[in-house]
Image 1 (tube, helix red, strand yellow):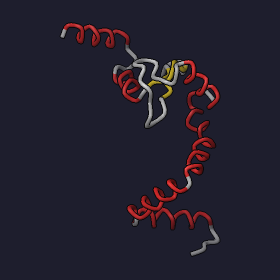
Image 2 (cartoon, helix red, strand yellow; image 1 turned 90 degrees about the vertical axis):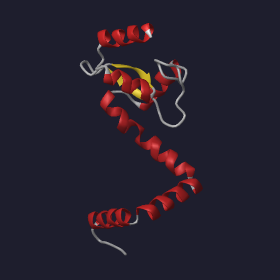
Image 3 (cartoon, helix red, strand yellow; image 1 turned 60 degrees about the vertical axis):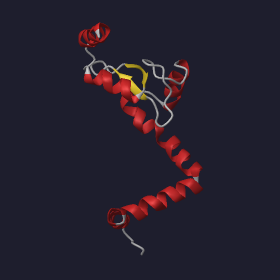
Image 4 (cartoon, one colour; image 1 turned 135 degrees about the vertical axis):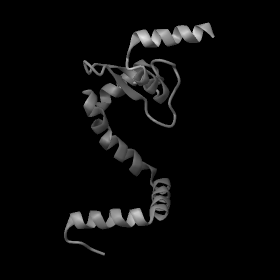
Length: 127
């Protein structure tokens, strides 16, 4: 089915995908397995988009990752299934390092409060 209006075509495709979720996922998985370079190139083209809010480029991210040895700055584990998160100060916006998902969430749950974090560490030391 051909549409002259690109917006209408996108709406039709989104509707079809919503109604045929399993078929759409199976097709996407089959396509990515046959064309892994297409996913990589898409990721590479769009890397700077997810880094933009932190004020760094993909080159700076890669340099930071290399300085950290490819591992989380807190726990030292390497991420294999997803990229390391950009940790930043929510007040100043300054980038501090790259963290695994667990460490990034942990710091977030402690609201970057050193006193609370040290109290939690002391509590764990008592156990």
